[in-house]
Structure formats: C-alpha cells, structure tokens
Image 1 (cartoon, helix red, strand yellow):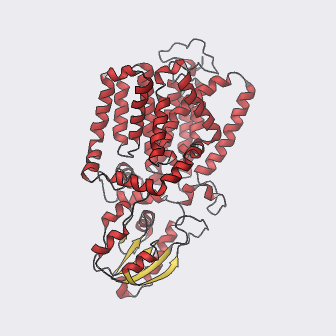
Image 2 (cartoon, helix red, strand yellow):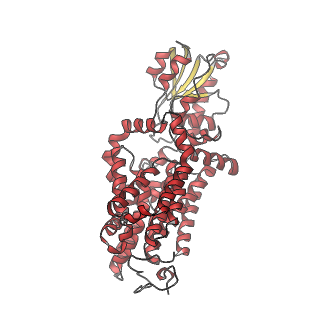
Image 3 (cartoon, one colour):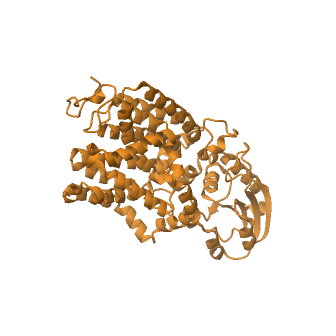
Length: 511
C-alpha cells in the first residue's frame, strides 16, 4: 500500500487509492522520501548558483550591520538576519556563497513544511509530490532562497506557524498552539510582518470558528509564549520611539500606491499562473468543503492579511508565506480533481513544467549578466557591478592631492553603496551615509572637509560645499540598467558649516 494513503495511526484511510490519495480529511503519513528529495534538490540548485553575479544590495547591508555585532534592533528592521549573515561569514568565510547557505536551507525547509501541510490535510503521495514540486520550482521560494533577506526567514516562519495551527485545529491537540507561539515570537526578530498572520488567524477563528479554541488554555499559552520571546524586541521598539512604524510610514508614502496597484497581479507572479490556480482552488476548498471545517478559518484569515497589507501599502510578497499553506491545500484539491483522468494529468504536467521554466528564469541567475532578459529578474539587477563601483570610487579618491586625501571621507547615497564600499573598498577612508540605520553612524568628523560622494545628488552637495566636481559616473561594465548605473561620483570641498548642522539633511528612510 502507498505510504501516502496510510493514516497517522497506521490504518488505511477508507476508500483511499494508491495513486489518487484520500479526499481531504485526517492527516496521512508524509511522503518523506519525495519531500526530502525535492527539498534537497532545491538546496543543491540554490547553492550551485549562489556565486553567480554577486551580492544582493540587502546582503551587503546586512553584512555591514552584522560587523558591528549584535543589536536588539535597527531603524529599518529587527536584528536576526544581520546576525545570521555575520555568523555565516564567520563560520564559512566572508563570501557571497557563505551568506546564501542559510537562505538555501530555509528554502528547502519551506518545501518540507508545505509538503507536511498537504499531508496534514489528508493529501496522499501524489498531492504531496505536487506540493513539493510546485513550491520547489516557484518564484516565491527560489527567489528568497537564492539571496539572504528578511523575507527568507519570514517565509519559513509563516509556513511553520500554519503547519502548527492546522495540526492544532485538525487534531484537536492544543500543544501545537504553543509551538506556533514559539515560532511567532522568534520570527519577530526577523520581520515584524509575521504579526499580521497572528491577527488574521485570530480574526478568522472569531468569524467562522471553531470558537471553542478561545476557551482553551493552550491558545493563550501560545500567545503568552510569543509575547515573552518577542518582548525584548518589542521593548527595543518602545524605547527607541518605534522606528519600525516610522519606517513603515516612509515606505507607505513612497511605494504604497504602486504596491496597491500591482498587488493582485504580483500575487500571480509569486507562484506563476498555473500554481495560482492551484492555491486558489485550495482557498475555495477551505471555504466550501465540510471535511475541512475545522480549518476553514484560514480562508477569512488570508482575506484579513491581504486587506491589512493593501491598506498599509505593503508589498505582495508580505503575504507570500500564507500562499504556502493555501498551495498545500490546493495540491490536495487538485489531486482529487485529477482522479485517474490521464488527459488532466498530462495538461497539469505540461503546465507545471512550462511554469517552472519561467519561474526559474525569473528567480535565479541562470542567464549571462549581459543578457537582454536579465531585467526580468530584479534580484539579479541588484547583484551586479559592486566591485566595479568600489574601484571607481577608489580611483576618484586616489586622484586627490595628498593633503586633500588626509581630510577626506566617502559619502554614500544609499545602504547598498555603503555595503559595497565596506566589502570591496580597500584603502578608502571611512564611509558615511544618511540612509536608514547608517544615519546613526554619522556624522563625519569635523576635520573632514573633503568628500568623495557616490550616488548623492548634486543639489544636496552644492548646498553644503563651495566646490563640487563630478569626476565620473558609475558603470557596472555589463550594460545592466540597474539603480546604480550612471549615478555620479562627485568630489566636494569647502564645507559651508559644521557637520552637526548639515548631517540631518542627509537622513532618509526607504526600502
């Protein structure tokens, strides 16, 4: 008998078929070989491609933050990801590959968790295989598994919380609420957006039940554990004037309208058109199928999370973790729809294969750096040209007369430039920037009246210095038109006032 059609207690599910699997219902044993095989293949692929192109802009920033040691929080994010990046470089070496090892492992774990959710919802081996292959080839999982960003850990946390919640509701075992609370509390150190998941789940349970969970001590134990684990992080926010709220307001002001406009189309991009049909079918099944009544709160919970994210002007990937659970449910629903119909199987297989190719090209650096299709992959766009940027800044600095070099510092326009100069700018003086957390590391010393500025607009510099000369423009060398391409390298001298008065004008918040 197929292992995917065996219940957790070892008995065969009534009416289960070896290929099709049972209808949605009691959990079946996970198809561990399939899940582990796909997850391992995903990790191997990501590690094999981890050295392509170079650091992502956020990775350079996290590396820079991590070098200063542990902090309980930053202006723009919690402390966990910079700490993980620093730990990876200390253990595995200061390289882009080292930073991306934790990211690849997180992606593999997400595939495993998605497969376990499908098993928990009663999906047999075929449903679990669909869940593993679909997630393992999706833009959502591959893109954040290729680079180490806050969403990498956040996606893993959402998938784990959803698995534990499904177990608590379907099995009636309250201890899983505590496990959900543990993950939630720890996840707050990676990204605060995970709190939306908790809010959505509580609202969903209040709306459609089962409301009896509100009478159980386990739910409140889970909430208490989450608050206890996350309290140092929350205390940091309260004692530092809630910098994350300021950051959220700044992001909403700059990107909110665009994010709202592209939100729904981008949800399709996260998993691709074919897989979107699958997760939508899972959402519908949660609402309509009486067998899944204990977990139907997930459907309104998803709606609450989406509405709150759109209202706040957040990015579509903020709710990507919820799609892991919905896709697992959709895999079970799709398996039931397939039955033994060969044509449906063929059509689904072709659709999955075609979608996987497109998702791979969009998520991973498979194409040459100068390929005209690279702009389709924004992650790759932000991962080229950093060593060349540092070399151009070094050239401008070395060209200064010796007496000016003694009084010079480097002024970077953003966190990516600062991180690149820290990584590759050997022989350069201290680098300062007003972007996000880096503003707090300034201002430059008063003796510094000469600056080599990269990416800082001329009007800002002209207001603070008597003489400014553009000595070059950034060129990544491969013709990729990214955010850094063509930005000015400027040498200024003759500061018009003390840095303490000028520095606040350089401060800005952005993602």
